[in-house]
Image (cartoon, rainbow over all chains, first blue to last red):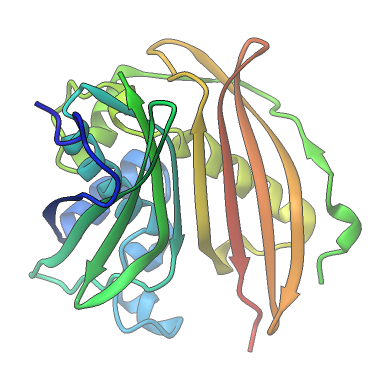
Length: 137
Length: 131
């Protein structure tokens, strides 16, 4: 059953953790067509003043979408999603970076459920104002 | 600096892009979903049809795509795209501003199948100034 069935405003949704690594960045770059070298090339990223390669903001947002998809469990669908990219997610070579996605029900109007998401990596919010509206599928 | 009178300027999509199952599966598996995941379960998938439009438009505005950082992003799905549909992106500049040497552009891109509006997207793109 979907975590959203019969849910009330203010309810917390179970936190989900995703692991990002360089292979995921490379696969996402190819799949999305966003081949900006700050997501792929360590030397390039450092040269433009970043601490290291960073994940695509859109990859982080896609993982927030994945968390929503799990909560929806095919019984609900996401009809709107917004995110602000507030902090970069740095991904070191030969290691993984955890991304934690949790959610809370912000509002329910006429069958439309607003889910407010909190997306954290390295104890920092990496997405801001992240909101989605879901309805029955 | 980007001229403020660019607000309202429209860029109609010049060609359509096909929604391929193989592209959808590659997108799904890249984020750890299964290859058979449906478009309705991937709310950010349409970025594949809009970001390349933004990349095409930026140089026409004198903006350097190699200095872009994504500020925020919104998707509204009026319905979901379907496999084998031909999608066209019509874009419009909704806002421009200069801040601390950066040019900030809000670009709306509407995805159409024929005359039907399927998904509306908004991207705020920050073009970093050369310090």
